[in-house]
Length: 302
Image 1 (cartoon, helix red, strand yellow):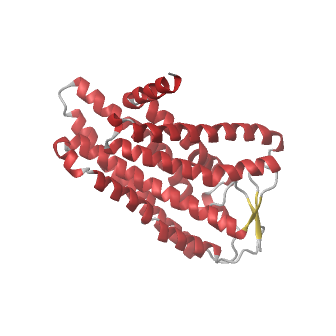
Image 2: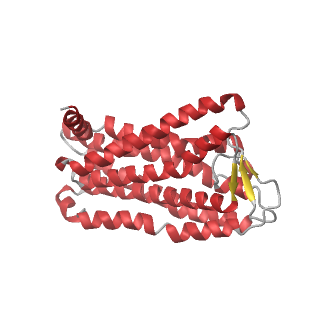
Image 3: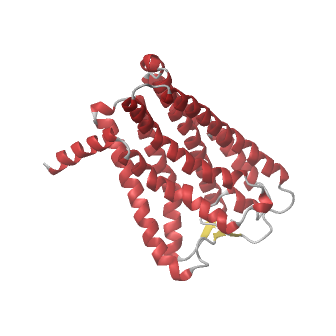
C-alpha cells in the first residue's frame, strides 16, 4: 500500500528533542486540565447548568482532537521517521476535519446559550432545557460526519504521482492537495464550500449573537451587572477568536498564497496551542470553576 512521509519538523533536527519535550508537556496539560473541567462540571451540583454542560462537551472534544494529532506528532519526533500509510493518513485527516467542524458548531451553540441567558433571561430555563442542550451537541457531531467522510474520500481518490513527502506534521487538506496530480479545482471549490458552511457561517452567527449580547449588556444600569455579564462571555469570545482566526486563514486562503511554513505554524495554533490555553482561559476567568476546583482539591487533600 502507498505510503506518505510526514516531514514534520525534520528540517530542524537539532530541535527535535526540545520540541518533543514541549509538545509532550502541552499534551499532558491538555489531557489533565480538560479532564478536571469534565469532572467538576459533572460532580459539582452548582455547575449543573447549560453553560457548564456545553463547556464539559467542549473539553471532551478538545481531548479527542489532540489524541488524533499529538501522539502521532510525538512518535515522529521520537523516532525521526514520518512514514504513514495511505489509510492512516486518510483516517487522521477525516477525524481532524470532523472534530474541527464539530468544534465550530459547538462554539456556535455555546454562543447561542450566552445569547439566550443575557438577552432573554426570563425564558432561559424554558428555552435551554437539558434535552435541547443534548440535541444541539448531538447535531454538532452528527451533521459534520457525512460531509467530512465524503470530502476525505474525494480527496484521497485523486492520483498522487508527485513526491509523497507531506510538508506538515499531520495529514491536512492543503498539503495533501499539493501532492495530487492533475486539476484539483473541483476539490478546492469543495473545500471552500465546506469551509463556508462549517467555519464562516457559524462564525457570522457567533458575531451576530455577541453583537446583540454586547448591545444588551451596555443597556444595563448596574455596573456590577455589566461586569458579571461581560465576564461570562469574554472567555468564550477569546476561544472563538483563537480557533476561528487560525482555521479561517488555513482553509479559506487562496492556494497560491499558502506558505507551507506559515501553514504549519497556524496548524500548531489550532492543533495544540489553542487546546492548551482554552481550559486555562475558562478556569482562570471563571469564579465558579475556580471555587469548584478548590473544593475538589480540598476533598482530595483531606
